[in-house]
Length: 135
Image (tube, rainbow, N blue to C red; front, top):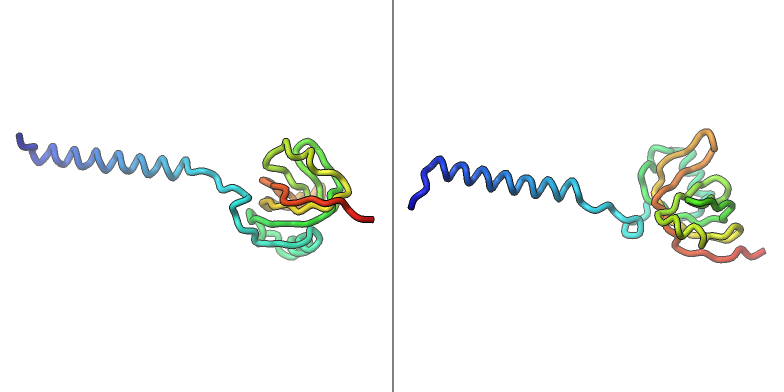
């Protein structure tokens, strides 16, 4: 039994449509990038990063940074480094690990500067390491 030319065209178009839908689905629902897997565009102290942001905030928008600084505040969703960098943790259950007056290394995504609170904002943060501050 031979298929007519019109039937072959319809079957071909159906195959192309199904492939297009599968590709579209994979693009739309691809997994989010995890902070831990991404390379940091800046590695250094919180104080040095503040200076970099002050000179050119747009350069750092949506980039991953790794900062070291002193924990000066802890709340339910994040921590504050050096009184001017607020880090919202990816896993809010890990907030309890951070203790004030300890040195912390953290990796997160820069999302902007809050003029009202005069704070640098990071989200998707993960704690890399922590050690007690020596007096």
